[in-house]
Image (tube, rainbow, N blue to C red; front, side):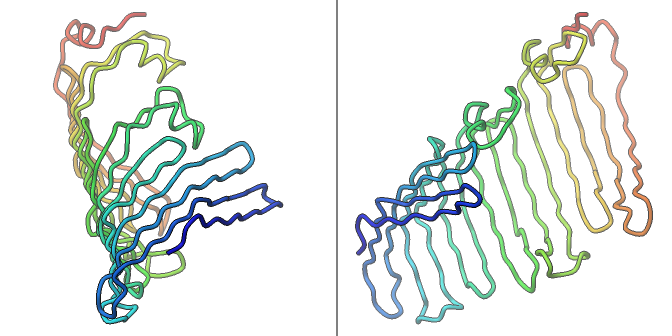
Amino acid sequence: NVKSGSFRYEDKAAGFALGVSSLTLRLANIKPGEPVSTAISFRYAANSPGRALSGQADFLGRLNLKGWSSTRTVVEIQQLALDCSGIKASIKGTLEDPSAPKADLQFAVPELGPEQLGRFLKSPPWVHFPAMTGRARIAVSSGVLELVGLEAKSEYFMFRASGTWPMQGQGQDSSRALSAELSASLPSLTRKQVKDMLPAAGASISLPPSQIQAAARWDSEGITLSSAAIQAGPLAFDLRGRLASGTEGPASMNFSANSKAVALDELLRAFSIAS
């Protein structure tokens, strides 16, 4: 066991410093061929020009070497709790085989508003991410990252994605192919919220609840929007098309849209438009 461990790393040229303290490591049931119960916790503080982050990480899991063969290693993450400057997230799942890594992870991310996001990056005051949970299944083989499946959901949306992507300097561009689906039910926005998002807009407008159903694919030849059905109050339209990558010439774009007729007075009422 390790108790009260600490270390510090500094890059004076870059003005970066990382300190780890209260490091605790506990191993139990250390027997050949048997999973090793592992618990790790530590506090950290990172400082760089204009930014300071601190928090804690707590890991509880098991390390299974399966006969002490590193190529068959399985790390079982029973619970990984992360606290970064008061923002708490959790992960659990498995990591397998360092020679051809595979991961199956479940995650939970808290609600992130302007105050929380401002600790990491500059963002407009209206940007807001709801709390979400999800699952990511990933594998790496022959220089290609395979996203076996990614699912993320919140109170407002469900997102799914899968595909393959060549890692930097490896694989072939032809192996790039990502597919994604989005289903969202967005709440209404008041005039103030819209004005915060579009401060340069001359008109005052509110937005009714919206529904979005979309599917797209990104591959070596470009981006294909196979469907995007959007409804906001009485306004509804379908959008589909393709943006070619231009690998053998200039990029090209081809989109089409269909919408139903809406009476002007109905539109004005739904969006509360005022000059």
